Image (cartoon, rainbow, N blue to C red; front, side, top):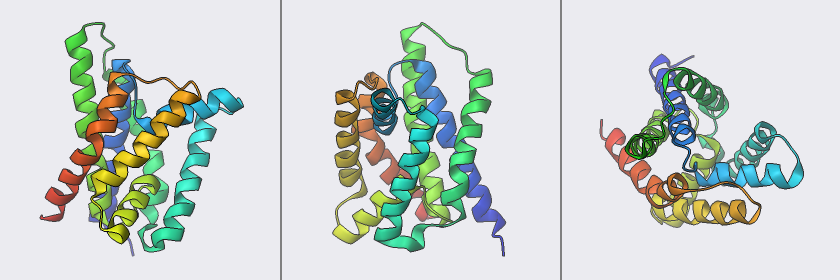
Length: 193
């Protein structure tokens, strides 16, 4: 039976993550570390970025399955679809700007909407995003804070991405340093409701 409340929360989470990606891309100052790594892989292999994203998602679903398969659900499958829809929707209305303060506001909006989207997805308990679910499962198994594990994995992906010529910038560093902490905040806040 479909739990419409959880499904709605999953869909909203995916849309918000898509909005975040659009904010980062429109700011033109670097995206998240995973996108930097995926772009680098695409550059080095000639595989389209979308296909690299699918391969990366399958890789993290496999890791999530091996770590904590109960975290896999309908949200694991539908979230990437709604992330794409979120990007496409916001891209239609978000103006590109050369004004630095506007671009910085976009980065902050990207950070907050991504973290809220991930928090909504995780607390829906309807199937985690593959990467975030894997990091959360590791956090629970190792008793290390989510933000610490997220920082290590994001840092590793950023380094690999830079070595493979992926683009990065202030937005990427912002996501690396703050994303895990802000996601952890939203998970705790949304879990209390």
